[in-house]
Length: 173
Image 1 (cartoon, rainbow, N blue to C red):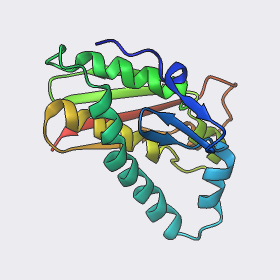
Image 2 (spheres, rainbow, N blue to C red):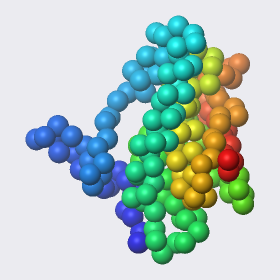
Image 3 (tube, rainbow, N blue to C red):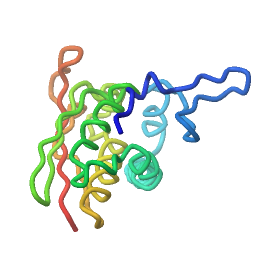
Image 4 (spheres, rainbow, N blue to C red):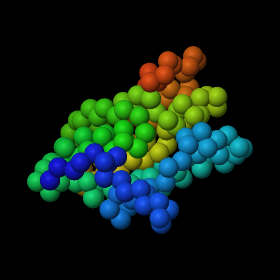
């Protein structure tokens, strides 16, 4: 069961003021508005809020992962492609998964979270780690942990547009 790209499935129901993919509601929000919230919080509250966002994405992103899974693909390998395509459709950067047996690496180019958080010089891509955790937990059928190993928001020099690279890793718990 192939899914059309997410951006083609989104229903912009302006009469009701909502954006839907089936029954999953999305919100369009500028990245700097979202990430700016963390800049206004003192430490450790800012780091705790980012972790809470990652947990929320892992929990609620699981609904999308289940909806996008293809029962004709028992190993769920195509799911990684569907999620990467969905990330691009939503403006979450360009995702490239590297799969192992019980581990996974993810390279993300042009993360909106890192780009909007650059002046903080701290890891910013908690939502991506949360979604990676949701996907890998679903595929491996057990809880996993996903972490951001490198964030372009921490780079000494600002990368050229579309070039910032963030690196993530997930492993089975």
